[in-house]
Structure formats: C-alpha cells, structure tokens
Amino acid sequence: TSLYYVFACPDIPLKFTKKPYRFFLDLNDLINDDVDNAVSSKRCDQCTDYDNIDDQFEKRIIPFSRINDWDKWIEEYIERIAHSGKNEDLKNFVLSTLPKWNKYINTLRNAKITIIQIPKVHSDDNKGISEVCAIFEKMNSTGVRLTVFDLLAARLFKFKDEKGHRISLQGLWLDAIKNYPLLEEFSNGETDLYGVFALRFIALKRGFEVKGKTIINIERKDFEADWASAIDYIEKALRRIIDTAEGGFGAINSRWMPYSTMVPVLAALLWKIDNDRLDHRSLKYIQKWYWSSVFLNRYAGAVETTTKRDYDDLIKVFKDPSYVPDAFAEVDREILNNTGFNLKDVARINSIYKGVMNLIALEGAKDFRMDISIELSHLDDHHIFPQAYLKGIKDQDLKQKYSKDKINCILNRTLISAETNKYISSSKPSEYVQRIIPPKEKESILQSHFIYKDAIEKMESKFDEFEAFIELREKEILFRLREKLDLSSLQDQIR
Image (cartoon, rainbow, N blue to C red; front, side):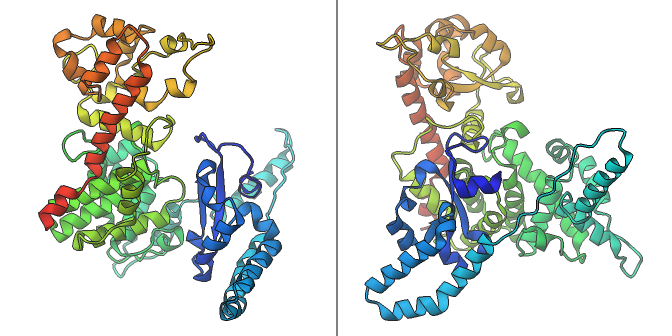
C-alpha cells in the first residue's frame, strides 16, 4: 500500500493529514551517493515547483510518479543539454553522471518485493499453527520486530570485561524508570521509544549518526557513564518541555508534546551547554530551534538525519553566532518574514495545533469560571464559539455559513475544564461571557487565552463576529510566536 501511494500518487490524504502528499527523488544527492537525503515529500498543494518538466530539469528532481517513464524523462533531459550547445557539459554528463543515475534508478525499478501469503489457520490445525509460529520466529530473529535497543542490549550483554562484568541494558533501563519519574511517565516503562532516545543521545554525545546501523555498533567503553548522562538529561529535557515557567515549552503532559522525537536533540544540547559551561545565549538558540521545529513540522516522519544535522548546527551557532542553522533560515523565510503565514488551516492532530496550545499554557490559561489558574494538566481543549452555535448560523442562501474545518480551527479552541465546557454548552459567547466569567477578572482571564480587548468585544457582540474574532486572536498568537523566534535582541547583545 505504501509503495502504491508513492508511485501512483492517488488523490487521498495520508493518515492524520488533510492533503495528499507527493514524493520526489533528488538526483543531485544520488551523484554523491547520499541516498538517505535523496527522497523528500511535499503536500500536493505545495508541489508547484515540480509540476512541469522544465522545473524538474532545472532542479534535477523527478517525481516518483515518473520513475516508470525514466527512459523518456532522461532522453528529454539529454536533448535539452544537447540543444544548449554545451558539448563539454553533455560529454561530462553522459560519462560521469548518467551511469550513476541509471544505477540507482534501475535498482529501484527492478527491486523485488517479497510477499508472504498466510492461509487462514483454524484453531484445531496444530500443524498450521506451528508453521505460522515458525514464520514469526524467523521474522523476529532477523530483526524485523526488534528495536535497536533490543539488538544493542543483546550485543552488550554478550561480552564480559576483564573483571567478568557484563552490561545489562535492560537492567540499566529498569533502574532509570525507577529513579526518573518523568521518564517513567512518558515512556510507560517501555524501551521502544525512550530507550532508543537514550541511545541516540549517546550517539550524538560521541559525535556519531543516530541511525540504527550506527547505534547497534556503539562501543561498550564508558557506555554506562554515557547512559547515566543520557537518562539524566532526558529527564531535564522532559522537565523543560512540560514547564510553563520562563524558558519552558508548555507541553503540560505527554498528550500535548508536539514531537517526542525532539527529546534526544534537546537533551544532548542541554548536556552540551552544561559540559562546556555556555551562557544564557545558548538557551535562546535552543528556544528558536524548538519552536521552529514545532511550527515547521520538522520532526514528522523519519528524523535520523534531521536529528544529527540539528545537533551539529546548534553546536556551531553556540560557538559562532554568525552561523545560521538550517532550521533558523527556514523559519525566518517561512514564518518570521512571511506575512502570508497563518494558523487557520491547522489540523487538530498537527504539531502546530499542539504548539499553539503550548503557547496558551505558557500564557497561564486561566479557566473561564475561575480567577486563578487551575492545574493545567486538568484542562482540555474546547471551542470558544461553541460548535452547535456556529452550525446554526446560516448564510444568505440559508446554508450553514461556517465549514467544519473553520469551526474546529485552532483559533476557535483553547484550554478550559470539561466542567466549564458543560456550563458553556451551546451558548453564544455574548451570553456565557456575562454568565460565567467573573466581571472584574474578565480581561485577565481572557487575555491568558490570547483574547484581548478588541476580540472580547467580538465575543460580546450580539451579531455574528466569529471571523473577525479569529483574525484578532490569530494576530495575538502569531505575535507571541514571533517573539519566541526572534533573536534580534540577542544579536544586538553580541554586537
């Protein structure tokens, strides 16, 4: 199914997305044998740069949907070089570049996919059951079901040092979850995610890639000391992620963490700051990296390459403030300097949705019925303009005025208690604001949700001011986000 999606490009959104995705092969990376970075994906509405053949030729990027037509595509590409009159370029391409491209493309086109068909086995078929068990045992023994944590645990335990000591990775893990409460909470005691994160930390600390093939070959020398550092700084990273005080990231709990895959990078960076005794500026760089990664969805999907690149980039900017990490350049272009960036189409399962909720938590997020902040972990996300109320509003043609997506957009949601949401029910904002919010505390309560004076007036209006409300609230949220991303004051200090 996955391969069909990549090559056939059906007009179907991927799981947890609203838009179909398209996949591309960067032929420039193949020249350098950089296969890991050669494949990329984009939302279908963001693929205009690769829609026509001229752009594909110029960037030397081919959609996977055209791999089957490779012979025709490359023939046209060669003709394009020939017609340019650059004979030397054509000669170099045919002798040097083309053979390498053909090697990778032919490997891809000729790949054989193993398909295992298992007939239905009835409970009284002992022979059939034993055969199925044998298949799964074989799959497990070849690593299909085992994580790099399991594989490294087996390799480390296999060898003794000169004193007869073995390293029990499973034992180290059990000690870790017993002594580090956040690690135990976020991992649920399982090694498949956070156990691997600890190993990625060790790889970063030692200057290695975090890919599985590298991690399973981690040397046992000083391993237990590095493991202790990994667990300690993962706990510190989790503490910072859920913290709602200055310098925290406001995730409250595991449900609201945008990307758990960012944990090893954050942990390793915090270790680097302590180890090298770096100053407060390094924490500002981490803040920009963190919010950039959340609001650009940089840690969705496979993240091994991004993990190592980001760690190396941040280490460079710690030492040389003039250096611009990839994440910084991208967020400056896509958010800080992009007046078209908006939050209106953010899906609920998106990391950006969680990022906005984290910003709300950092504002204090007082419950609407209280004049104090109740425990944030007890709050849930609910509508500000109730769903039932908005569905009842009709346009000039007597059709429902607001779409489901607009009603459920992040700009119409915030953190309030379930009990308060019941009090609100389907009431108009103009009604429930007067009924449940203490008048003297109205501004301070609503401002803790990025609802300021003008937006409050829209809530209290007897007319339909929903669209004006979300415009005003979006402005305030983006202002706070850009504050988190802006390093201009830090640059002034450096100068």
